[in-house]
Image (cartoon, rainbow, N blue to C red):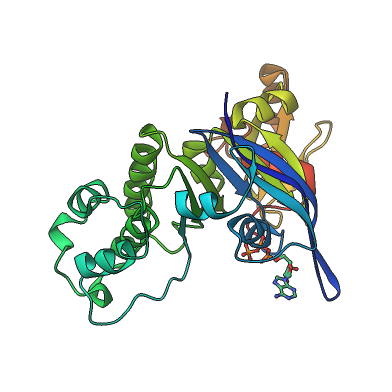
Length: 294
Ligand SMILES: Nc1ncnc2c1ncn2[C@@H]1O[C@H](COP(=O)(O)OP(=O)(O)OP(=O)(O)O)[C@@H](O)[C@H]1O
C-alpha cells in the first residue's frame, strides 16, 4: 500500500481560535478519504493547509513520502466550493484556459465526456445549472490529470438527482486510480463514496477509519426509531433517547424482540416505527453529543 498523502501534527491558531489542533492522518493511493464535521469543525482550514493555500502554525504535509512542494502542486487538482469562473467563456474555453496553466494536460474532449459536459461544451459558463456548474468545476480540478484531487463540499446546494449523478462521476474518477480527498457535511455522501473517513470536531480528529470498521467497532446493536407523538405519555422501563429536538425516539438494542415487547403496550401507533442499522450520523451523535448538521 503506497501512502499518497500524510498530514503530520497540523495546527492552525487564528487570533482567539485554535481551528486545527494537532491533526494527523494518512491516505493510501487510490482511496477516497472523507473529512467530515459540523460547521466550524476545522475541515476547510485543514484542507487548505494541505492544499498549500494556507500556511499552518505548525505541522507538515507529505506527498508520496516527500514534503509537499512543486511535484504536489503539479500533480494535484482542487475543486473549490466557490471558484469564480471568467465571464463570457464557454465550458470548452474555460477548460482550455485552465489547461494552459499546467504542463500536465488532460485531453479536453475526454474530460468533457467524463464529466458529462459534451452537450454543454459551447454553453456560456454563466448559463449552467448548479449541477452542471459543479461538473465543470470538477473538470477544472481534473485539467492536469491529477493523481490526487480535493473536492470541497462538492454537492452542497444540489438537488438529490444531481447529487447522485455527481457521485457516479466521483466513483468513475476513483476507478481510474485517482486519490480523492473529500470534505462534506453529508453522512450519506461519505457512506456512498468514502473508503476511509476522519470525523472532526472542534479542531480535533475524533474518529478515523473505514465507515464499516468504525460502525462495527462501536455498535453491536440496531436502532428502533419512532415518532415521539406515537408514544404515550412517557416511555418507562426501556432505555431511550430523543432526537430532532425531541420529535424522534430512539432505542438502541441488541434484543429487538424483548425491546418490542416492552415498547408495544406503550405505543399508540406502531405503523411508523422503523428498525435500522446505526449509521455515521448516529456515530457522530454518540461521539460528540450533537448532530452533524448543527
Ligand atoms: N480567517 C479566520 N480567522 C479567524 N478564525 C477563523 C478564520 N477562518 C476560520 N476561522 C475559525 O476557525 C474555525 C474552523 O473553521 P473552518 O472554516 O476550518 O471549519 P469548517 O469545518 O470548514 O466549517 P464549514 O463546514 O462551515 O466550512 C471556526 O471556528 C472558524 O470560525
